[in-house]
Image (cartoon, rainbow, N blue to C red):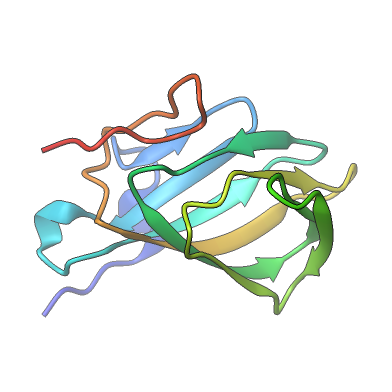
Length: 129
């Protein structure tokens, strides 16, 4: 059984902070669950171009609001607390947090992240062993 608290992650190498987001990586590949799970905060006004070519991701928004743009169709979805979206086709997308508010979300990746990944120039995470 694995039991963790967010406070166990804060300030460790599993607490990754960038200009646009902070990811607290709760479950990683090394935990052997077959997926990884993250408590992620998108910073106010951030606009992130992402394209997870090597991973599928499901996101459940628990705080804040913003927009999710599907770059294949240009369809814009307004998202708010209670919204779930799944990038089931490695969807290239832009995620925007409204100015003045952050978005906090629970993110699940398959295959699982190791915790050492960073976005590459295309917005993807490389597969890391």
